[in-house]
Image (cartoon, rainbow, N blue to C red; front, side, top):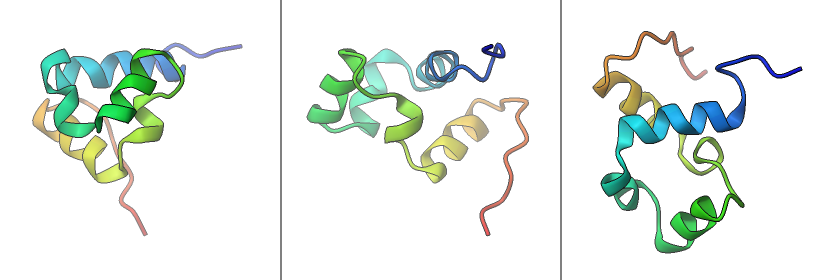
Length: 69
């Protein structure tokens, strides 16, 4: 059973909303962008923890992100 908000596609949709379609190339290489668009990879797997944290902070997202140890 998939829990809404925790499905990788849901998370990718949220991250893409924060990044914006035009800005995807800022975060992804051409190869990564092609893999993402063909659904071979997810943004969660391609972006670093720091990039995701930065995106969520910029969007002032109501998400509690644990600190890395």
